[in-house]
Image 1 (cartoon, one colour):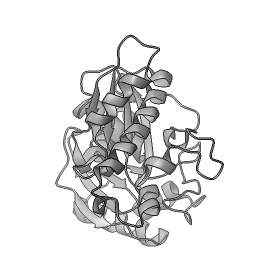
Image 2: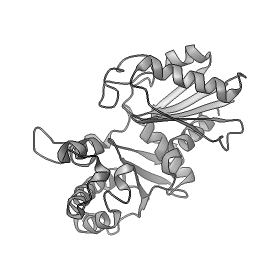
Image 3: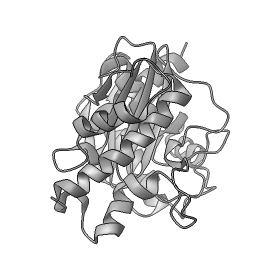
Image 4: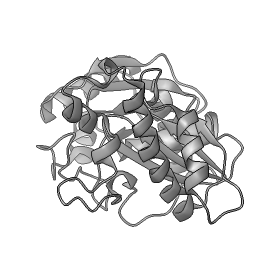
Amino acid sequence: MHILFDLGKTKIRIAGSRDFESFIEPKIFETPKDYDATIALIAKTAREISGDGEIEMVVGGIGGPLTKEKDALLPGYNFPDWGGRPFRLDLAKELNTSVLIENDSALVGLGEAIHGAGKGANIVAYVTVSTGLGGARIVNGKIDANALGFEPGWQVISDDEEFPYASDFLSGNSIEKETGKKPFETTDSIFWDKKAHYLAHFLNNIIVMWSPDVVVVGGSMMKEIGIPLVSTEKYLHHILKIFDEIPPIKKAELQDIGGLWGALEYLKYSKK
């Protein structure tokens, strides 16, 4: 049995695969705040899924930037107390097996590129507008080569010294701070249209830097109450001037299990 997981700030999804082509119905939990409790929850669930049989490998995504060696989280907003703790080695020791970890947005992007809205495209730019703002470039069915990972939400789009980053305008965290409410509680269409304008600027930068065949946009800020993709495309057509055409902008299709599909694909090519 191979174990797949997707560890975000609010939810963790864990599933098992035997055939490298599919996975069983995922088990979904609230993400523990505590590091050791999270390791214990993944390990306990993995044993349950495997029926106490052999676990050949564990592959999963974590919602934050990783060290260059991809064995631990760097300090970040989602898990500020986990920075530097050897997540990969601790989980491997707990389960006595090999563990691979990757940024969660990169794995969702990989899943969307192969099984979702980016299927059939050679170069996919995946963007998630969720609790945070992230994304990755997927080339020919693999996460593109990189030195330190992809963190597009940290691009600077303002000269405001206090709030210069794209994530300061678009992430769920920033919207909650701005409004004092959960994002889904804000129903003002003018507010969300303004966010679409910011998102169009963000996507302009993604397109001119990554030159994708398609842009796939997902995340909780893109739901019915959230940033309208139609308005984002409208603004993008006015902003993006250098190319004679704009790549298709598509909404992500894999809902909340894109990270598990990406983990499955990452597992497949790591075993080759």
